Each structure stands twice: as structure tokens, then as C-alpha cells.
Image 1 (cartoon, rainbow, N blue to C red):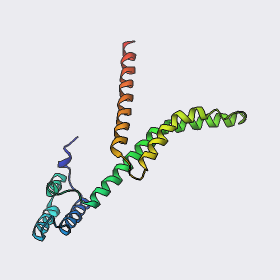
Image 2: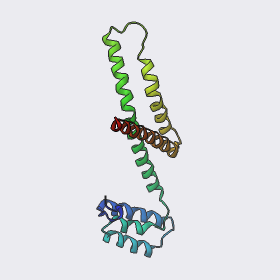
Image 3: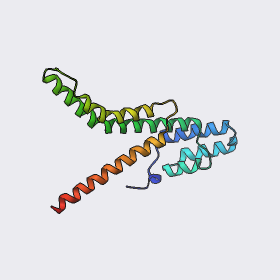
Image 4: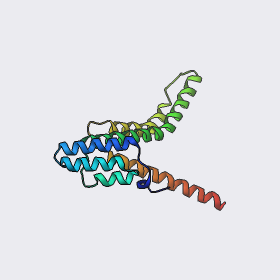
Length: 162
């Protein structure tokens, strides 16, 4: 894959940078001359790297920061749904079997639902908390994924030996 800074910039990215620069000028971080010069260079920029260099000495603006948090939450939500889809499928199959067998007796699919969906529900609650700790949630998901990959590698290694 190519270097992300050499990817060509879109007009929307130039406009977003111009808006960020406006916010920094209004906050007093840039003079009007610096603002005009940077916006001119932003509209002339052809790559994302050139756009990044125009704002590397500025902190994240509140609008950019909130947009990044929204993107990160969306990515984590999508990842949680993907990870929970296996448990949802298994739970749905068990409930369908219970219904097909007459739905009599105790609701035994609960013994499948609890261990498969409880971790996903806990993580979703963490994601939608008032002040979520996105770093710890992402670290937990990454460590779980690393364990699954290591288990899969070991399994494939044994299969080749046989």
C-alpha cells in the first residue's frame, strides 16, 4: 500500500482544513495574514501530506476533535456488531430450535445467550456511556482479536503437521 501522505487530497478535505484554519484564526492562534497564506496553500495542495503540514503546529480544533470521536465511536460500534454477530446467530438458532420443538419446558437457549451476548452487551454499554473510555475498549477488542489470531495460527500449524 502506498504512503498515506502521498494520496491525493479531495476538495472536501481542503474545505475541512480551511474551516479548521478559520476556527484557529478566531481562537487567536493564527493572524489573518497567516490564515490567508495557509488557506491559499490548502487550496493549492494536491496531497494529504501537504494538507497535514499546514496544520501540524496547531492543536486539534473542537470541531475536528468531536468529528474524530464520532468516527472512532462508529468504527468501534461496527466492530462490536461484527464480533457479536456469531453469538447473535447462535442464539437465534437455539431460540428457533426451542420454538420448533414446541417451546415447552424451560427456556434453555438462555444458557447460550448469556455467555455469547453478555460480553457484547457490556462492551456496547461501555461505548454508549456518558463519558466512554474508548482507549480501554479498543485495547480490550485488540487483545481479544490478537488471542483469536494466535489460536487460529496454532490450529493451522497443527493441521499442517498432520
